[in-house]
Length: 234
Length: 315
Image (cartoon, rainbow over all chains, first blue to last red; front, side):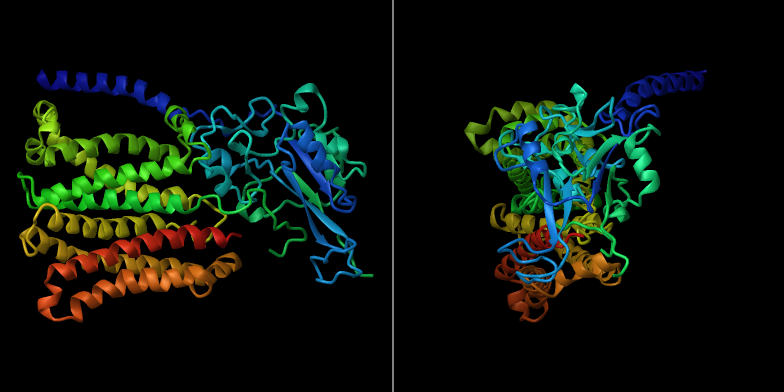
């Protein structure tokens, strides 16, 4: 009899504790997006980029960043600019082709910054699946900066919180516009769209063009694609 | 590394986690290590009285974890944002789990320290108001000591898990790091508490507690050396990124910190002090303080090496 009661009490406790423990498993971060969600993708075409830097300026203005700061950088990889040394051959006067590459948040599908963020400030936007920041939650611990395999995050000195390129989610996309850098690019080196929509220009482009992802070995599955300059001999 | 396209610049400009984080890892390791060793001895020898070593270890543990928290808060871009870490949680994040562990650990360490220092508190009139609190909570002493032992070990290990989640840095992103941090926390924590026990609580140099401590120190140190060797070998035999990170062990400023600080002061120092000197000296208080300081300095160098050499050698 008493054994029975014990068991009943045990089962009761089990039920009650599962009610208490189950919600603990629900964290403030949703990792898996819904299937009907768009998959926003940006393509950087190295063959078209001239390194003019208009994208950087547009980014600063659109996102109200401190002067001289933008959420993207252009790294010059080779080719001489008057008075500067070519990063590839080291000469001031060379015949190397001028090459630039966009450095910015890679919008990983499997984003380490979202996983490590202790407060859920670095999160995935519910509607668009874009990795963005909730500045009101960020504690400034810089865990996301260390965890990002691309070193693509930084502290915004004006707000004291971490920042990243979120395809202008709040400044442009929400108004139905393209990201500021894409709008500003005069050479069509940046293409933006929804990869889940088979009729979008990015989908069509990526179907026919060879594009690569940065540092695929980390397994973060970036949404930024790069079309590199490939020269097949001369 | 051989991709058709790659960028090498970054937006963060510099090291994400500078020296205050290394100091925090150091303090958290000492805190967890000292308390674990003291409680191990307490349970192993089934002590019921407040031994000098328990007093020293719990006080050391409370002070170091508080200083560690201070480092952590001051390293935030804006220390006033600290409350956000306590209010918002993400259970996928190692840091968030650590916050939960620490917010249970710190009050429990304070409680355990209160119990251990009851006699000392009685001596100071200003602290007498704590005596009724101790009397009221006496019933939870045994369970809280058991829980805090578990948490102390978790805190030591957590500091390793916390940084090993940074996948960009081969020296940091290794699975042996939590084990290494537990071992070095235990040895430095025990050394620090031992010095405090002799210096402040008048523990005899050759009491039975000290004999147990001397007995467990060498195996822990051997484990530590093994873990460091494992870390270095996994980099040496690893892929290109890991091999380039291995250069941290033999060139640059951090290589000197490794060889002089960790190997020289941390390991060779105590070994020489104990085995290469006369028995009269190696059994003296001077030798105890010197080898204790060696262990603590070696541990601090280890944390600095991992944080700086690690972040300087990213992929």
